[in-house]
Amino acid sequence: MTPAARAALVAAATVAADQAAKALVRTSIDRGDAVDLILGIKLVNVRNRGIAFGMFSGGGAILVIFAIAALAALLIFFARHRDRPLVWLPTGLLIGGAAGNLIDRLRENGVTDFIDFPAWPAFNVADMAITFGVLTLLYVLEGPPRHGRR
Image 1: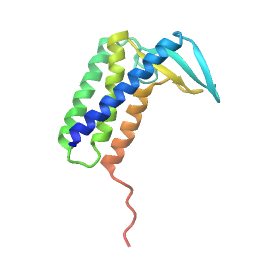
Image 2: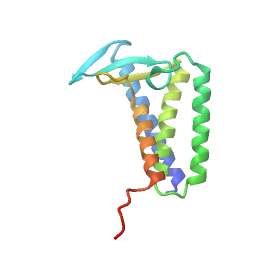
Image 3: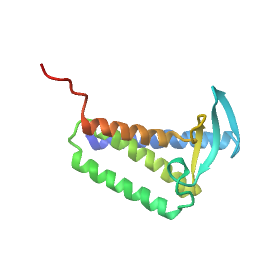
């Protein structure tokens, strides 16, 4: 399987998991309600009309344009670095996460967030994919830890 096919598979799986989880939350929990899970962690049904941590709330079309530009930049990066080992993984996670949230933004004018930890803003599967995508990308770019040579 080519790196591009792997990235596409990861992106598709990420979008599918994200959209399925959000649909389940939207049909199971009324907007604004919360369900206690464990240790203060809750399932909620809230809309984030901004980006990370609700910043730029009400940005509307500008946020959509920014997301599309970020996706285009990511695709260019991938095209230039596709021979690098494992670059397909963060690329797929980042594309899938961005696309999952973009779908919400276009369909509902805001992103459905549903995992709520104490003292942390609510987030979703797409947000987790973006976070792990960035961390994995740093690993891919920097390489595994190198130990001193003897």
